[in-house]
View 1 (spheres, rainbow, N blue to C red):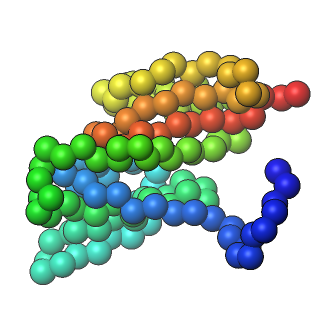
View 2 (tube, rainbow, N blue to C red; view 1 turned 30 degrees about the vertical axis):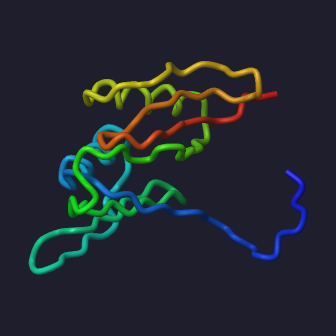
View 3 (cartoon, rainbow, N blue to C red; view 1 turned 30 degrees about the horizontal axis):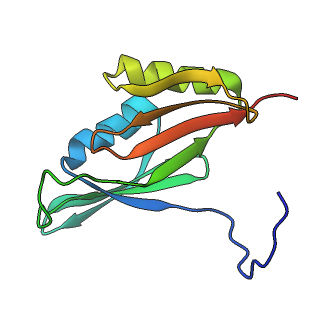
Length: 136
């Protein structure tokens, strides 16, 4: 991809998400998607933040305090893409999510724009895609 006008030399992008149930979210990211836990942080003796990682992907999961309402829609208009190195890993990740009780919003498939991918929502409603380029 040709870069025009960039001033910053960024190497990675991480995100921070709020979770209704931090423990359940950590289990989902660890057991269903396959992330590892890199760090935990406490406030007043209670875990309030967990950093999960997979390769160069880093997601900070924060316990929501509910001040904006428990039933609000999270991630409206927001989409995160996880890139994996192989076609087999796309399919294996989808199978792991389903086996852990997660739901895919679409199945793994080869797309006309040259990737194999699928999409899902985490337990808080944040939308993700998992993809890899097709050989070509």
